[in-house]
Image (cartoon, rainbow, N blue to C red; front, side, top):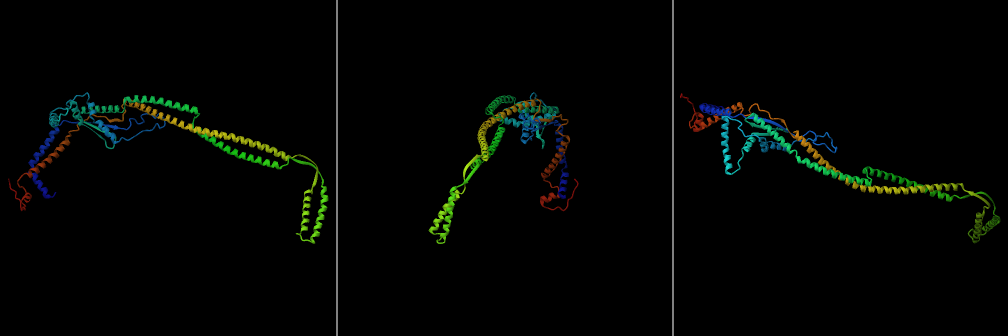
Length: 504
């Protein structure tokens, strides 16, 4: 704002100072009177902590013993939970329950109370006429009182926390505290009611008994089948049987190798025994063959004759070939008969043949024993394989029965836990241990929350000043007179040379 405009405003305010003072004083006086006459309003406050669990530890212990008993289940409270609690706190149902047993009474008296009551009655006339026009049902006195109390009740969530702050305003400090206490008691009782159904414990207990009998029946079936099939611990028995089968397979392979070695040894001994004579000569007396003495001179004569013919005939001539044939035949006879002829021979059993026979008998006995062992081991392997097949087949049935037992046990434990939780919930309800707790109970307000004298007076001063300035501006705009050079220039477009002030 430049100096010219500021000077103009100062001139206007000075010129119409009476109007500004009258309007400002009237507004300030009105605010002062209303502040003085307005009955004091006391506000009682309380804070509620909302938790996910009603206790730090689990409500019911883990009956199966599989979880850590020290485990704590902690889930954050979400915005939906907090909004639900706000709706419950400010619901008409709880307000009516809190007002139960109380009579609608005038909470304050005096001229101010009468004035405010009259203003309120006038303000309600349009609503009353509307309900009468549309034939809406009339509200009872208690319902009207509940609506009035609901208007004075407010609840909000403290920022970045799980705490709800609830406020109630009334003209009586003691009544404000008492009503808020009654409302919180009804709120806790309502939470105890919705968190536990008395019928639930009976239902859970009955279902637990039914499932317990079903579990016993399943366990009896499993036990009877295990006794009939001889199955104690299926994995251990299967492991042991597979281990035995593996060992027997290794023994069978080792025995097969030993049997093959024994049979090869028997074959070798049999061949060696066949090559060994059963008896050997003990004493032999022999003389030269007499036929050889006549055949040798004939051979010498044939050789001489051949030598003579070679001087006259070729080696491949017929005569030479005939002489050679005779020499070859005679030589064969000499080679065959050129040995001593046995006249007397005395023999005895061959010790090597006897030893080979003994070793052969032992080898045959060993091979027979190994062969019999292999046959018995083969039968054991077949029996073990059959036992393993039956064990696997029966194991399927055992697994089916065990799953049935586990399913019945899980269902039984689930209802047993539910029954236990219902019992604990009832005990927690009786002890007032809920998922919500009053962390700051209602206190007696020591000073009114409204009106605040200094704040109202300051507001009246500001409002009066603003109203005075507005009245000055309105009065200036509606006055046809011209009071300044700026007004002359604005209206006539004439520049002002000088301003002469005169005494009035």
